[in-house]
Picture (spheres, rainbow, N blue to C red):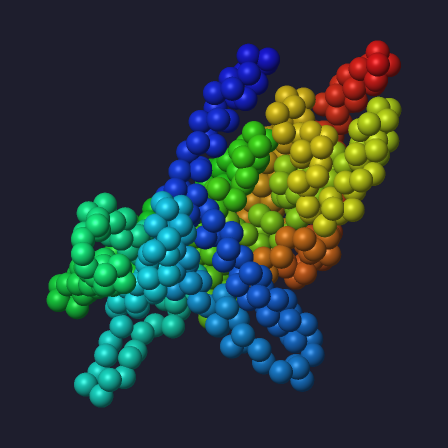
Length: 410
């Protein structure tokens, strides 16, 4: 075991950290993190609509969601292009690349412009269903600007600097617009359909049990190595968004929700991430009764954040990160939790969420009932609580004993 941990800490973790901090990868992860306020703003409206379903007299605030959550695709295109420019040290292109990406995104949603100048496009393409298009648009625009910057056109010449700046901005803008205009308007190719078609196998796999388990285990595994789970959002967010968007549309059409792989199931219900990723709430409770004075003190400090499913304090102070005895049960929980939830929802023993509420800091089982609209969520919360406790207990007892012995020696 020590050999494995040494390999993870000295080889695997540094290599992974180096990969996720590469400019292009980091830009995607940073953009996914920065877009969260818009997702949360939309989530608040969906949460409000839950209350409104019981009090119909309340005003309809759907448009607030349409222009927050419903704008994710176009907003991400701007963020990724500008983030890449920042990470590649091209500050002169920071805003222009982002604005160009917005223009290209509008081309890529394949709008129809009538002879009277009326612009028509599917509104849904601006939102979560256009997330992949927005990501790839931002990356492709950034690539053109990055390649152009390598030419250093007119730098060091007698031409005034502001003119050089204009020229070196105008040309990559025109190149981007020309490329995508030829693709969309001259060749009548719909990038939206092409991109989503290419990625549909990945999204389909994400909605399978193996895909669901991997989307739980991989970020948890990275987390135990001290690598932020945000770095995995570039993969998980489009799958989660596509899943919940399809569920919302299905229920609106009078059909049942079928997609389990959503952020609402993975995080908002707090059945899988009870206390945070790796289901650390029960670990925190065990720490409150530890014999080691150090671990008991940490447990008392961390319990309030844990109740709200925030486990950074316990992950880095217990620490779970890079501690073999605590890493293993974290991985186990990242498999058993989603496995049980998947089975329970597939057997219709618990409703599949069909509302977009991505607020993972609501204490369970309140959040579990709220997002599933099913009182049976309380029962499954208790069942999973017991399973997680049983998983943590033997590992924690050994860890507590080791710390106690170390304290006595000191």
